[in-house]
Length: 176
Image (tube, helix red, strand yellow):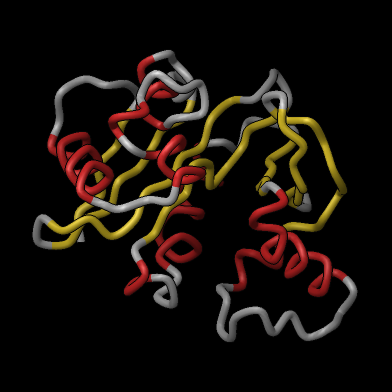
């Protein structure tokens, strides 16, 4: 596997892979606004965010294997005290149970963002099952959403709903 780092839209093999994957993938409209190159003028689109400095403090990672896109996600400074990790995460269906986010990307993101007082994983109402996993785990109940989730996720605990970039998000915070 190869890991590419993006901070902006500078030409790179990682950007080429991301553009190709997200241009050729058929998204429903809600995902297209966030990921498709054709929607790069939308405020929530990954290419808009890269172009406009969201990852200037942080990084957006692209993972490929033999030229084939596997996954991508980033971390970025939210405010002077808080970093967001696993932002704009997307993983191909065939790799979703390989835990590449937790095993490969999250450890790098936590290391790079360690100077921040707060480190958050956020999700919106469309991905609330992820937040529910953090809730069940904190309560000592069997998370059971997925078997074998990496232990690194147990280092986060749910702290409720916050408005992040003008959107209500369910937030889990790294326990220190």
